[in-house]
Image (cartoon, rainbow over all chains, first blue to last red):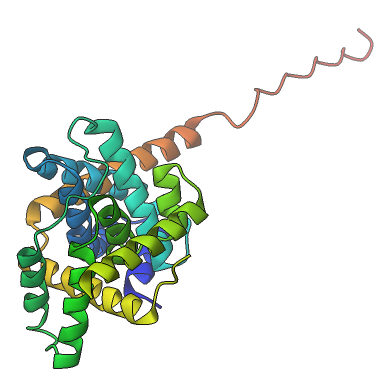
Length: 185
Length: 75
């Protein structure tokens, strides 16, 4: 079982304060960077740091009430809390759509990841292809592709967020990728 | 309807894993974030304890009415 979900389930069953603090630290050291990407991609910069702290607080307070059983469900739950928090408290600054990250910044992170796991030429080729798909997609597609492939949100999560149907999201992501592929090739 | 090719899916998945790993390396969780989390956990714990305490001092039901005393025999 995924380490993250093990920690979350243990937290749910733990009643002592010191154990909870220690588990919460381990959980948030895993999830904070991804939540940072989410918040900083959605909020104008000066407010982003405050927004991130509010999101962390909201997740920490509800952590014992998480009912799911898988890491995927847990991530979906975290992003739902984050989105609601940003919508409620940072409405003015909330872009509602992920802001594109410049390709050179994206690639810088890929190179950094190579320190721990070297990139073979074949994988490098695939990674360049993936980056081209993301960065050459139309602005309205970027948010769909980023949320589905980078954050792992499924069609149902995105449909709920956008207030559209599951099939609408499924088709939109397919079309966005097809368009991006035609621009890349 | 366009099908998402397996090659694209795998490439995007690998990209996502590596981007997030690189980002986490470049942006390790700051102490301020951990402090925020710990404060929230403490506050929630105190709320729970308070709720438990107030539950335990609440009377479990209405005070039983005292039965009227039976009259003394021969009274």
